Image (tube, rainbow, N blue to C red; front, side):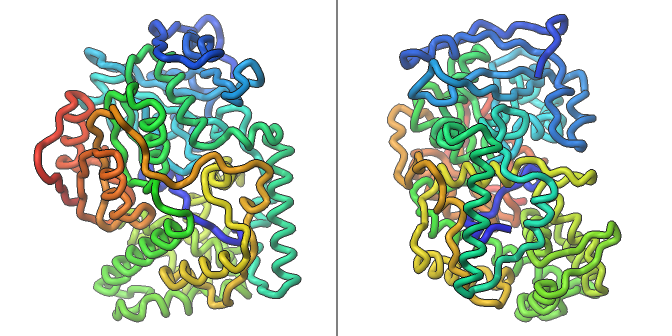
Length: 521
């Protein structure tokens, strides 16, 4: 996909499975709450939200039916594009709501991760349906937000059209020669230029990071009429939540951070740790597969990585045909495999796809890759991956030394050999190295003086956000750690009574058990 993926995005599928509004249908929100507002921001904090049907907020074919359900309503929140110039351009953020069914405490805002995943889509496709009948749906308005640049929010991050994404999936960028490196870096520069041109200019790209998204959440909190924020964030959503906690500790009521991103970890170290996490998940899959009849990787788990490489590496030179007339590329098969490693329930699907691939048919694996990168059956791509890259470039450290890139690729490949294409290191700078604005964040221990008790959830076999990151985040926030034994990415509100009871009691009553907290999937 890109010459070097620093991290693996938590797609809306993986994390969840895991406009104009007609005036005649509008309803004003409760009285806005504003405390300690910076100069020039009063009009944003005191804005009245106008709610109406959600149908026009759907950004994919898959969401259209869910967004048409009458129990959901939607609105747009206005925020300054640049908080340093609040009188200038503004952004309009998409917000979806499922009203509380009983005695209301306030609002519960959720974020599905990414960065780049749609919170409105998560609410109407999974969180809302799962939580509506339970205590959370009784006591809270459930809120989904598309962060700035994401989903139905405007201006929207836009860097490639559908045809360009199809072409990019087939372009492996594996030529290590000087000419090959130059060509790949030219493509990365072109990607950046297209992002600037199609997303609304450099000002949009400069202010699309987590620093500004956290400030947007505080405006949303006030506009919803909540004195303090109640929040549940998955994966990247833990970064967003911890940045909010550091910026507005006095405005936090309850914070659940599930699948932690460690705020103190460098970009390179997190990349290597995440690759090791996916190799751990692959090894767990291989051990389980070896017990099944006709495992496509054989009966010896120790040889599974080599068997996977032997099956997938030929796609570099000879992509596999699929039943819809497309061709399965090497990057597609890696993406499809990575998707299934997010959750052990997906492992049989991976076995089916690899078994089919062994016969020369790439249909099942390309469909998994489509899910991972958010391509719908009509051939349209959501802006998930574009937003992921753009926000990543604003949030993360820049790597502009090719020698450092080469070392990182070697370390990442050694940590996850199942993903190693065997063609050697191609030390090309990625899009972030050519970004037209500086990053707005850097690794550090959050300063959260005055933050109330928070809950961090970490799964021992989480591939995307390894367990230790949760341990470290809980320590950084002086929070409570819930350790979960299992093999999947994130765990809250997924049907496990041990986990869900702890989360629900905390969010509703601000109550957590004493002592070490542990659950098992």
